[in-house]
Length: 334
Image (cartoon, rainbow, N blue to C red; front, side, top):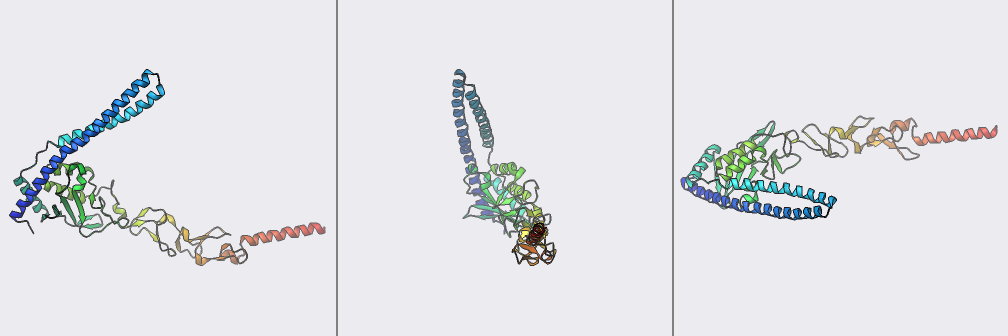
């Protein structure tokens, strides 16, 4: 259901107030980042004095150590200065008027078919069409923009959520409802800067469209769980992931294993995991429980074939002992 003209005006006013709060919070963010720069500068001054002292007293080893610490500190300060500069550049952004915000929200409503506003939760949301990536069906996602967010200092990721309406999570991790969504937070990759800019400039429709675009694509370089492993699981032995249809269930322990961690009984040729097979003490081959027994004399595990052929090592040892005794008796008699 579309928002009425009156409701849209109210939502636009609320969104405009949030944008003003967001802009003010950016100045606080600049001040916080500047504090890190000033702290770093104080640290540089201290290290500079120490370096001068080491030089004047001809302490080359200590001077080298201080110089290394000075180099590290300079790197931190340079990075902090870049963060302040980027934050200061974003603070110049003007926010749209209430009427412009209303027009932008109408555009979002047109793009997604419906725009919802939860007054109690101060949340704007739209729902995407059902998303399918390759052969993996993921369903619809609700993109929720929180208008009561504390601002940029808390991070742009905290301002919105991506919620699966009818989750089809990865088999190995039910918190991953999309290759790029974990715990309802989006890893936007290359689109992160564009999403941040859209929010800071009050382009709400563009924000929703950018998030939808990320959800509609698959980046094989940075998924939480790859599409190939989406319907698979983890090998019980080595922990590696396998895709649907590429695992094996051991009939003895009933756990799932990858191909590398499976073996088979050399007698009945049934597949088992390596832990559920026993090595015959005579032939050193692997056998399942049903094809193994124990030597009635020494109780060592032995396959039935070796037992029938009298191949247990204890029998061989007994034969060797008998031969040795016979030879000894023959030598004594002679």
